[in-house]
Image (cartoon, rainbow, N blue to C red; front, side, top):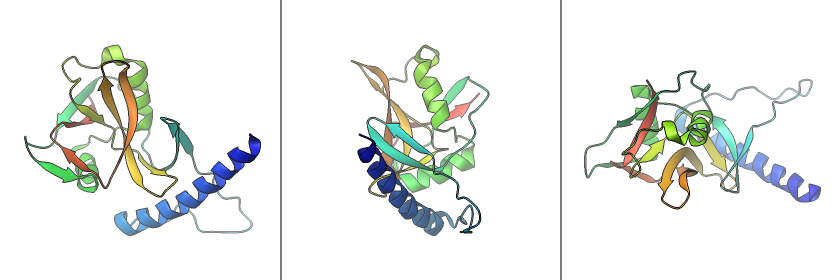
Length: 168
C-alpha cells in the first residue's frame, strides 16, 4: 500500500511540473520559488476529489462570510471556454475556492432553494490532475445523493447553466 502511495506522489509531482508550465504559459505567472539546493522546496498541496488525486495550482483563502449568491454570467444559449470563465470570475469578484465548496457541501441546507438545476462554480481554485489537465471545482445536484463535489476541465465549454459562487 505504501509503495502505491509513493508512486501516486511521484505521478502527482510530475503532473505538478506540467501544470506549473501550463500556468506560467497561460497566465504569465512567475514560479513561486526558484530552485536552491540549500533550501527545502515547498511540498505541493495534493487533494482527492471523487477518488481522483489533484495538485492545487492556484487557490484563494477561504471566505469568512458564509452567505452565498450564485451569479449568472452568461445569457441563455451562450457558452464560453473555461479559461475565459475563470478570468471572468476574477473580474467579477466571484472567485470562491475549494475550501468554500467543501464548506457549502457540508452545509447544503444553507444553499438557496431553486438552484438544483445549476452547476455551482468555485473558480478561485485551479487543480491539475495526473494527466496534466487543469480544472476547477464545482457542485452539482444529484437527486439520489444531493450536492456532489466534482472537478471540470478548464478547456471544457461552460454554458448559461453554470453559476459563479460569491460571498454576500
